[in-house]
Amino acid sequence: MTPVEITYVGGPTAVVELGGVRLLTDPTFDAPGEYPLGTRKLVKTAGPAVAASEIGAVDAVLLSHDQHPDNLDTAGRTYLSAAPLTLSTASAYDRVGAPVRALPAWEHVELPRPDGGGALRVTAVPALHGPAGSEPVVGEVTGFVLSGEGLPKVYVSGDNASLDVVREIARREGPFDVAVLFAGAARTPLVPDAPLTLTSEQAARAAVILGARHVVPLHFEHWGHFTEDGATLAKVFTEAGLSDRLHLLEPGGPRCGCSAARRGPA
Image (cartoon, rainbow, N blue to C red; front, side, top):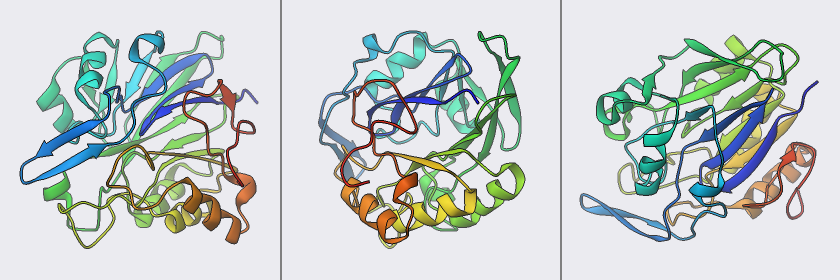
């Protein structure tokens, strides 16, 4: 089976290469700094390990949502303006316009594969960016499933905090070979009593629900509102007997398959 190769840029941003198709998740290329959001602010603590100019050509951007700067920052918006295609939510299309294409949940697009294997199917799947009922506050978010003949099936969660959503995706689209999970147990005053992304424990449970043989966490560091980090993920996965599934990639590290380039005790 053709491997999936993932290059971790930082935060929620990674290059995912599958069947010769190059995809970029949630572009964030700004330097560290503060982002005021009404009466609150988000603080970026580290810049990208790979500059936007060094990413190279991509076939599409997978944008989980546009309304929060930790998923689409100022330089990320500039990057979108030159991208050939950005798949995201209807809300993102309303706010950003072209080249964003709204892709409703459970609908898909097919991208031609230069490896001659036909097409890479990109299916939008639900995501809930916080506890049930928080949608009017946090806004619309999407995840993605990548699949194709002779390819591993990949789930990219986006900012999802719901295991019920994960169960629905597993039921309709699973099992998965690779789960790219946005983790970190993000917390902000926007929803003070619950995490806005998966906790480490939830990420481990999601791996089992999805049947994922490989888990690549994103969006668990480089911003001040994350309450759990790579060490927490490694500890929880080890305690759950799942350490062989966890791949903590080095930001800016060499392009790698999911069986390589681990970091720390995982």
